[in-house]
Amino acid sequence: MARKPRARPAKGAGSSTMRRLVVMLTSAALTFALVLALAMAWALWMYRGPGPEAASGDGTTVILRRGAGLPEIASTLEGAGVISSGPIFLAAAQATGAARELKAGEYEFPTRASMARVLGDIRAGRVVRHFVTIPEGLTSEMVAEILAENELLTGVAPAPPEGSVLPETYQIERGEDRAAVLQRMMEAHDEVLALLWSKRQPGLPFDTPQEAVILASVVEKETGVASERPQVASVFVNRLRKGMRLESDPTIIYGLTKGRPLGRGIRLSELTRETPYNTYVIDGLPPTPISNPGRASLAAVLDPPQTDYLFFVADGTGGHAFAATYDEHRANVERWRRLERARAGETAPAGQAPPAAKGAPADAAEVPAEP
Image (cartoon, rainbow, N blue to C red):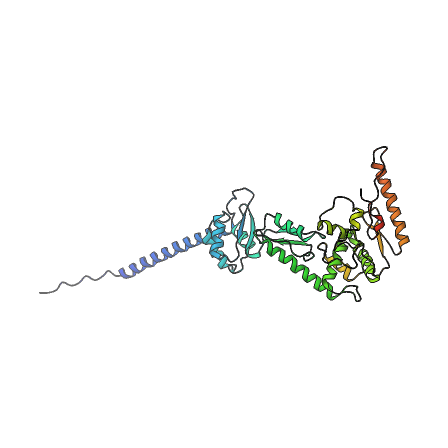
């Protein structure tokens, strides 16, 4: 049986199909490109545009823990409402190379901060800064109390050895352990002391860094005007060289209260009471520091100026009058007493005698009798 001849495709049908296929693929590619462009534009807007509004209206504080990975950081930020998309944050951190440079700490982001701002702050480590200040002349118990009262810190820090802390302002982090902060303060003290000791003046009347700290602690407690530390140090260095007793009132107080304010004048019975710290009674230095001296007091006793001063007394301005001889000192004391009487007379009620003058450092004769 004769076969029916096959119908031949119309001329140009194959090329027409190919054209349709090309058009479809091109259309799909353009659609994909458009969708991709829109997605990239949206992601870029999410990255650089305003972020979420803070619940408080002012800003949001976030703590990123040490050791947290990028996914945890992104999740923490998204959960706190700082960023609107954790995945976009992840992608941006990896694309910008910030993924390995993000720093732990406490951050405060303003409301509607862009994701770019958030990522930049964490990459640069712009953490919230908190500080704790240890003034010069505090005892170690007082230092421990300052740390204990700071609500940003955690843990417990017992009082360190007297004189082992460097009074300074320290940066701390929320949640930092008190013992760790105290350790930093003690290490700072050791570093400063080692440096100053290595540059000390030759021929000083003490032999060890600890003795330098003891003397510096006395200087610290005796100094009301910061600029007078070198002169006060020279008085005590000169006294030690001559074998004279230091006769420092703060050493009496430390022996009575461990450095807590006495709240009154020193009594004659306390002046003569034998305690390990009473430098009116003992020779040389007390057995331990009586406070935590600052850098300036340590420097003053390790490089004191060359003076012939052996005495000093208050001059009525917050500072002291220094003297090389006892006669000069007695004259300075008398001027101070006249000033005290004049001041007391101005404030005392009519018919009431002014109070007696308080004692002067380095002179036992100035301490008032016991009431």
